[in-house]
Image (cartoon, rainbow, N blue to C red):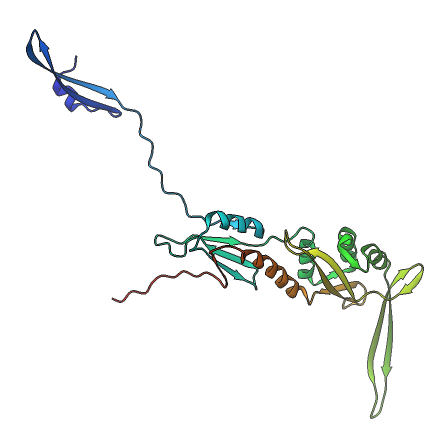
Amino acid sequence: MKTVQELLTHIVEGQTTVIDLQQDLDNGTPKRILEIRTEKQPPLSPIRAESKRRAHTFYDVLSFKSYLTKYGGADTVVYGNPETGVIHATINEKALTGVEVLRFEPMLHPLWRPWELLLKASVIPLDAFVDFVAKNRRTIINPMGRELLMLFSQIHASTHKELDRGRGKNAVNGMIVTTKIQGVDKAERVELPDAIEISVPIFVRTSPRIIEIDLTIGVDSEGEDVQITLAAADLMEAKFKAFEEMFATLTELKDMTVTLGDPAHKEWDYLK
């Protein structure tokens, strides 16, 4: 049996020393009982840090709207940037211990994504363009994808060179190179289109849009390989209209402030 001194001085981790003083009657005589014992304590749970701030990213406007409807309030502010297509939202603009900013970045639609990458390349060889049209012909509406594929699959390119060697006051000296590029349709030479139209949604969960893509057909510097140059002049307008469609959905949020802009939170300047 351990002595009182041992129980009070030898502390075991995970155990607690309990001193219990009781009063009882022994044949009518008051009797005090001092009990000293050790009890094993359950392990303490580690102290957890507070939850991290919310910084979610959403890829379609309906999901973004649903989240704001459930967790937003009168102090929620929505910021839309039509140039980048990105929309931010602060859950509580008046928060004193830190502002939580959410982000909506529309995801490119799978039907439009290949065209986006193609337009970034700008100039591509004929063979690469034919392969691309074969894989994405269902989105081409004018001329129809199948017709366009047949035309570009049978390209005929002819080059005519003229050399001038003149003398005198108004002499012409140099070489003139004339290149004629045509497609083949039913064994006849036909002119190739200088533009095509496609109908695709630009972002997920948005309406399809008709985008016109200009085609400039030429040859490389050596005059041997045919190349295609692509440009979409109305693409920015189509993206802006898609942004307006998504942004209009957010203007239906009740009690929240919906604006055009970007959030910016900076430190205060303090006078010394």
